Image (cartoon, rainbow, N blue to C red; front, top):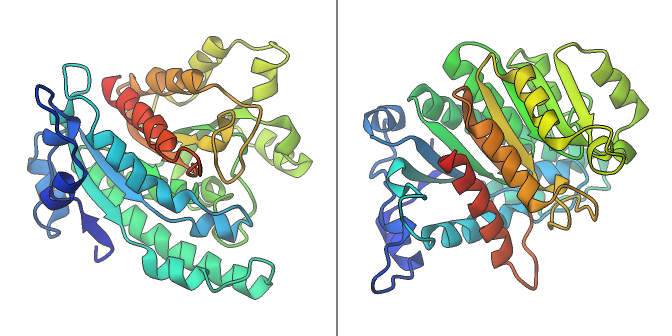
Length: 336
């Protein structure tokens, strides 16, 4: 747990913008005072949600993607703390744990060249180290009976979320993933494009539903692999939003039926959302409001055990907008 940097009152007070007559979310969230015995501390706290930051983009680099997802945690934390605390936002149910510090690994990757095979292999070894840290912490949060809200970072961290949850519950879990891509790429060394295939191969993933797969970016090989596995189901973005062969709300119901009999995680890859800066930004994707409906629909179910939002990058003109977006997603999960 040497990578965990606890969120504390000193950090909170620096970020809070207090106003007379207002009560801010950050004034009512809980924090931990010690890094030791995380499981016991969480178990004894009267909270439901534990918010964790994963500020890294090593997995994106290892997948030949565009870096930048490492910066979303700080801006999200700043926005989240300063929303209103009221009967809707339920700040008293929330503990902000802190973030895992991968700055040393990030520094190592900054010296690598993604066009060199040896460098890419080195970066994939570093992603394995991140996997280990993430899975250990998620294991402790889930085992304590709390629901983690994980803010990335790259989608490589889906693996650690799934593994940690599975080990805590002593069984494979299900996942629903709002994503333009399957992230079920070959087992070629860990990166942001194969978190689910590794989790499946190692027995941590039971059923997997991909919601809104983009037809233009799924290779024939990937489609054949997905179609050959009974524990995987998917729909495509085009079938819902372009050709209207399928209805969005009905597909939400179908996806829930596929995963609801077991504990499941909710994965949100921001490359599925139209015009949101991400490692694979798309001009054609789900609207923000439909993404929020997606989160609400699945989070309402008793078997929903975590939310993971990943791959978002800051806009140079309005970096605060990503923080506001992810804050909406966090609160949609909590309110549900």
